[in-house]
Image (cartoon, rainbow, N blue to C red):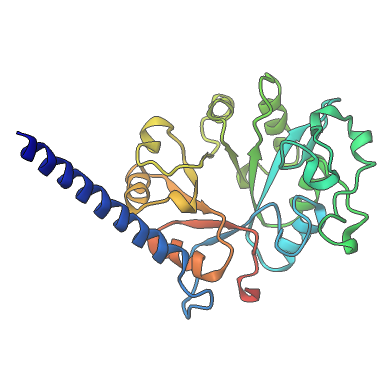
Length: 273
């Protein structure tokens, strides 16, 4: 009996080791394709927070830079200030920019205008300020770019989703906007407003049950957790899969081989990689 038990344990350990090795080999191949691999990238390139590889993220300069380098789609993040202004900012706090752990919601917009949103990246952008959603849509309205508008999780705010949607409608760009969020309640609210408005579920873990658990038109998944099974499940559900955030051409090509429809990257100009 004891020998049988040890035999089962050995088999279990062996299976676990093989599974771990296969997983390692898969992700190793995924991560380390040569950055200068001689292939064409044919998936859609989404400029993450604008062209944030060359400009301070989520600024008007980054959005203009994305357009100038030929990006067809730009992604940006929406939050809300203390006095209700919709602004473009990613982080939960201002620490990375100012060393201050306070949040956007702790400031009025006039107070935020006193903060420098560019010199943390380069002194060349010392005059940059945190833009409003109005300013961003006004800039992008005249382009033909699609927009990935991420609704940051700001907690309970019954007006937030409607306000962002209405602002996009005001600028006449809803036909070019996909709303993204890690907060599925926000996305459900978008569908309640307009069932035909496309939404993208953002996920840190690429589980294959995502389309069943969180129905959506698009899925944006961390590249480190994406698997062929998940890509297949999303496509079988009639949706599209994007992955974030490759840093070089090799990683983009790895994702392309995996079957994704697009990549969300800081490096919108792949020819510069």
